[in-house]
Length: 75
Length: 164
Image (tube, rainbow over all chains, first blue to last red; front, side):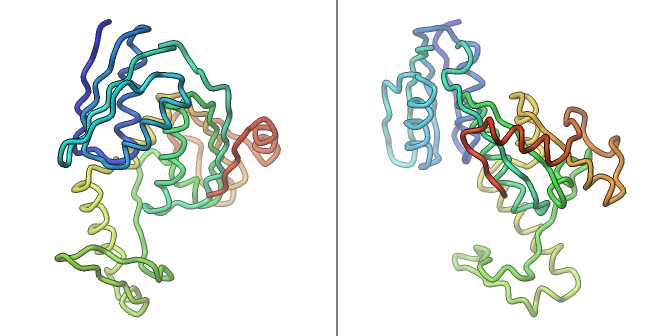
């Protein structure tokens, strides 16, 4: 598996996290998952998710009403 | 990604079976499972309805003084007097389901499937099953039957125990 992109726009809590977890499960150490989202709550939630699961949140950006997260698989 | 970085456990007692109250236990259970926790849910009393094969969940405005539904840019209170009118619960349920769809909130059916898929342990209360004259085959496949002692054993092993 290689890097992946997940479109979680329009989805509300906890779906972006659940979909991200599903995608990460099939990825290998070092791969990067890019997630697009519109749920403002996802900003804090992806920070907490990464702290708890040991994955690295390499980027968290906001542009207007859209957010982008990049998670590098560490486990 | 290898499984879980996070050796923690959570248990939830699920006691309510209305559409609104079905959300907190399933949201927390699926999220905790996604974060690597081992999760158990114990469904008792009205919460047991959430394990029925066919979900037909509704909300009521009665006794729910804090309920305000967004409507035409404002918020509409739901006075108890109105809630007593025939058809009010159906109307409120329809409004809520429309909101859920519009805002990209998962359905309870989807969250429940996600919980099953992520190996959340589900325990259906045997006593409630007897009390409300439900049959095992009325419930989805997967949940095991158990009682208070089954829950307590799980709770003693858990880091987080919630009663919802």
